[in-house]
Image (tube, one colour):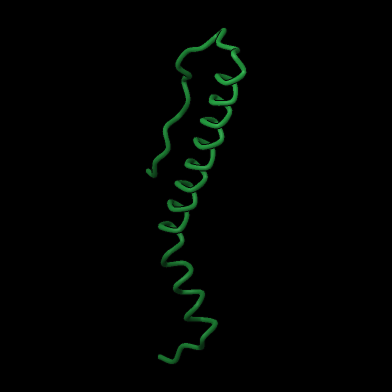
Amino acid sequence: MHLTAVEAGLFLGLLFAPALSCVLKSIAFRNRAAGKAALMRAEAASGDREGRGRGTGKRGGCG
């Protein structure tokens, strides 16, 4: 069986697509969490502490 570079690239892309998707979801979750943490720090620094409490956010993960 003779594979060209394009066929080999497509095969590898399909092979690693699920793992890559999981990694990208993890990165997105971390970015959202960092943004929320920065927002909470800014609100705390401004002295606005009314309405604080735990959110019902979804935790990240794959699967």
